[in-house]
Image (cartoon, rainbow, N blue to C red; front, side, top):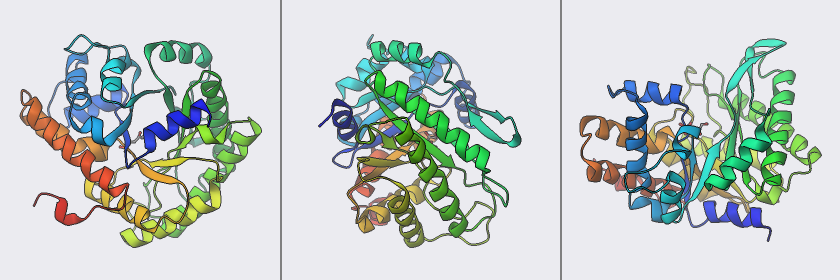
Length: 336
Ligand code: 13P
C-alpha cells in the first residue's frame, strides 16, 4: 500500500467523511452576511474553530479542507489550526486552486486557475501540516454546455494539479463539479457528468497519476434546480452509481460527494441510498460544505457565545452523514 493510498483510506474509512470548510473569503462573507454576522477574520476563525474542536470530529470526520487564511491562523488554545485538526485524528487538507475564471474561447464557461507557482505553494502547505488538497473544476449544463473546450481544459488542469500534489507527497481531491443550475433532466446530468469524469481520468492517466492515491469529489446525478421534475432518492442513487461505474477506474479508493446546494436532509438521504445500493468496491462518502455547516451556522449566528450548543448541532449533522456513508441513516433519527 502506497503512502498516498494510506492517507486516502485514513480520510475515508469507517464511514468518516470530509468537512469542506474551504470557502474563500468572498464565499464565506456571503454565508456569514446571510445570517447577519460581520465577516471578519476573527469571526471566520471563531466559527470554524468551533467546528474543528467539537467531539464529532473524532468519530465522524476523516479530513478537513481549509482555505489559505485558516491554515495560517492560530486557535484560542494557541494551537495551529492543522494541529487542532490532527489532534482529533482527522487529516488537514487545503484548497489550492485560485478560483474559476472566464474561459477564453467560450466566455460563458469557466476554467479553474492556480497552476502558476503551485509547486512552491504546495511545499509551504505540506510544512504547515496539510496532507491532502482540493482543486475544483466547474461545468454548466445547457444545450451547448459543457463544451469540448471546457471538458478538455479543466481535465488537463486537474491532471497537472494532481501530478504536482502527488510529487509533494499529498493526496489530490479531484473535483469536477457539474452544477445543478438549469432545467435539465437527471438523464442529461448523467450523460454530461459521465463524459466530464471520463475525460478527467483520461488526462490523469496521461499525467501518470497514482490513481490509488486520489479522492474523486463529484456531484450526485440530479435534475437541474429549475426542472419541473424532482429526482427521487432512488433515482439519484441509481443514476449516480451508473455514472461512477462507467467512468471511474477500479484503482480509485474512494469517492466523496459534494452537496452542491442540496438541503442537509436531501444530501444525507441520497448518500444513504447510494450506499445501500453500492455494489462497487469504491468507498462512497461525503465531502460536504453547506450540507454539514448550514444548521450549525444558523444556530451560531443567533447564539454566538454558545460554543457547546453550536457543536451539538454540528455533531448531529456529521453523525447523520456518517450513518448515511454506511447506509444506516433513517429519517426517524432526525429531530422533529
Ligand atoms: P458544498 O457541499 O457546499 O457543495 O461544498 C463542497 C465543496 O467543497 C465545493 O467545492
